[in-house]
Structures are given as C-alpha cells and as structure tokens.
Amino acid sequence: MNCANIHLYGVISNEDMNQFLRGWYDGCFDKLRRIEFYVNLRWQKLLAGMSVYEDCECKIPIKPLYRMKTIYIENRNGVKASIERIKQVEDMYMCMTIR
Image 1 (spheres, rainbow, N blue to C red):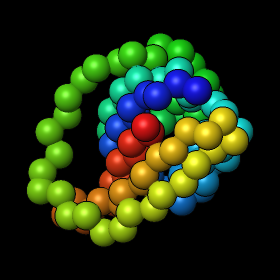
Image 2 (spheres, one colour; image 1 turned 120 degrees about the vertical axis):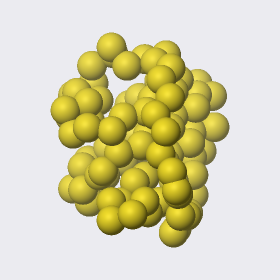
Image 3 (cartoon, helix red, strand yellow; image 1 turned 30 degrees about the vertical axis):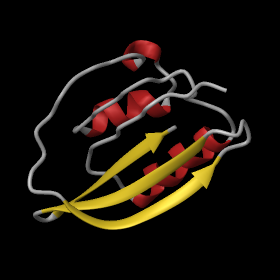
Image 4 (tube, rainbow, N blue to C red; image 1 turned 180 degrees about the horizontal axis):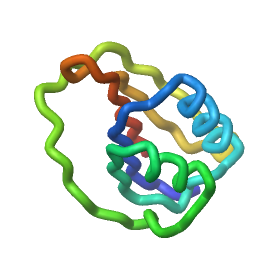
C-alpha cells in the first residue's frame, strides 16, 4: 500500500468523478503523490493513466472555498481516502486526499 497524498482541484463532472473513483477503487493511481489541476485537459490525461503528473507539486490559489460534503472511502488495496466537494463562486471543485 502506498500512503500517498492526492489533492485534486478542478471543475469536475459527475461522469469524470465516477470514472476516476472506479479506477482508484481498482488500485489505480496509488503511486501518485500530489496533484492539483484546474483544466479539463489535465483531468483527461490523469484518467488516461499518464505518469507525467506523478510527484507533481504545483500550487494553484483557489479562494474562497466552501466545504459542502465529505465522503470517506477505501479501495481494494486498503488505501483510505476522504473526498470533499467544495464550491467556489459558481464552480464545483473536488479535493481528494488519499492517506
């Protein structure tokens, strides 16, 4: 099990969210350390399994943040995660921390 931290920031559709969660639950993305994204292109590359974002460190200011909902899940490898749905102005953002 890889105790990684993943922070995903971006405007995310429910379909993309479900696709990522299915892959994560099956054990994908365990090697990822920290990811922050804000455009759909990076999101699509992440879903495609491209390793260019492994151990990626970049800070993107996103303020103000309003926490709306927190979900706690665990994948087949025993990796636990919390997902926070965050609202900023009119856009929906998601922050996922894997621990």
